[in-house]
Image (cartoon, rainbow, N blue to C red; front, side, top):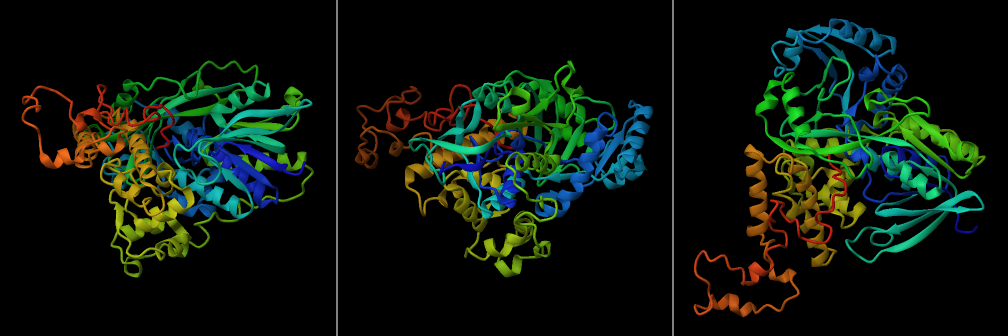
Length: 605
């Protein structure tokens, strides 16, 4: 078959991006397809912990050993995606001394560096820890940016000849003569860089092998192929606080339980999490009590959280897999190990393998394992080098120096840009002059935004995951219009408006669970900025109606002007008040377009 590729990888999360990178570097002709942005699913909705393995040192020592091994690898190959925060497992008076000792012994048995410090020293390192914390085990946890990590893997894959298609949902798995021979995909807006709401096209991609790396959605792809992949999705909530109350990953040293970790990440802290089994990875309740639980319980470790401002909350779904016959009822008891399901052996359906389970920390190891498997199936002899070759942006970390003078940007913007871009800093920042700050909260400059647009096209949520623009304290209130304006150089007005609305909607989703106190004021300010100052709730240019603009210049007609307070919305502005406005549910922009209230995926952390 002339147009047949070697491998199609379905799923653009950490595992899929790792697999496509490994396949491409080994010289295979590979295509990755993802129904949303990269990190659309579980990877884009996690707390950003780079595991030391300490969390599994008692309950799942195989996973713990894998975590510490890959923790070291990622620090080497993905330095610009990792912050070496360190971690502590802290003990309160009511926590078990016996379990504390088990945790310490488990870490040492798994070769995880572990040091015991008393409560006073723990508070010297982290002054906001509770006064009654007795002691802590120090481990090499870290924070990892999953968005940056996935993009770097995809970029490296593309540089080695792979094709990466986002916004391309699989609509069918192609089976001929009892064998999987490819997939059918539907492009959200045609091939290439995304342009919002263009008519879609359908494409069949034939391949010698298909890898199902869709995580919690693996069962849906399996069903298209006629096989059962019994993933057990488990949801967990994460709550984002407005500042870094701690600079170290703080874990509660106790057996499994909800609300037991605080992860400092970039400008914020992320609280997690719950572990509750659900039937559908895209349709499950997001409940307020879960957010309350995070804040109330973790305030026992860091009391300052009780009075801190909550920016947003989001839910992720773990792709847990339990081998048949295990019979575990509690999802917290299911192993965090990963499994390769060869459907030729398992279901008498050659041509496809599913990979399920696992964690982001071990994504590269998982990718190496399945790429070895695919190479064996295709009789392709090539070694894996992904543990040794740095990802794009991490090749030469000496570039992380002060760029303020060289590029005319002030501290700490230059430092933060360099941390995000790594070894790409020179190429990106030197290409735009002048280079003002577009997003103050995250310190993102025009150069970074334009570079991301070059990569992602008009999809501003893809720009967001590459730069963190709009992910700070104002949640896009002060910068979404600035980011969108950078599109205006090459895209028409309607595309720019739709792109801005879509980005604003994504920022709104997570705030619905944080509308109290100062965050409620911030959300209302954001709405007023967009709905009034920017006229997004009543712009006649967005309507199909003929508007007499001369009437605006002439002023109101006394004969037809309603009495003050009548509530009439017969004016042109009133006629379009639902375009990006505030509906009866308090949802800014809920009726801005046909997709505005689509549950979708938050894609945020």
